[in-house]
Image 1 (tube, rainbow, N blue to C red):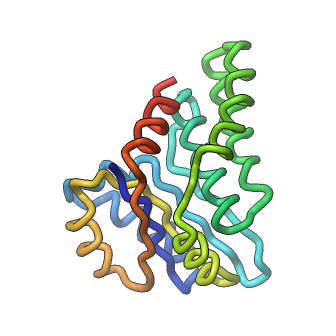
Image 2 (cartoon, helix red, strand yellow):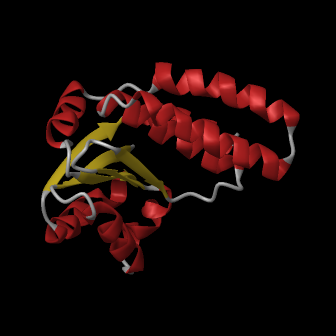
Length: 178
């Protein structure tokens, strides 16, 4: 099992800053931040998505699909799916596989249909993410969650989290491995 965490800030610049600061730490759970994403919304409601994946790998396209699907469902961002298309395009070019593009298209649909989230999580995230806000979205392995939540509280603001079931976790890991 894993824990899906949205760490929300009232400052549009804070999430990317904190994400970089957390990566510098030597805590056990920091390696889970390799695939984290920071989202910023400026005062004019323009959204920026800061992916922290290596776009030259096929796994990065899977993470882009995961975050695109999540952001589409929690923040109601219709353009969030574009991030998976962009990363998929870069990944496809780097591995030069024509058959991979068809797989990405099918998997994008799978992410939309399979990623079921807690209604409370979606409601709470969409309620606190507005103009002038930012957030870090991360997926932490269950063993690290208590210490991570404790250490994250030192950085402030709002932490919203929900458990990802074993079944969903296994499906995600299988999709990311392909």
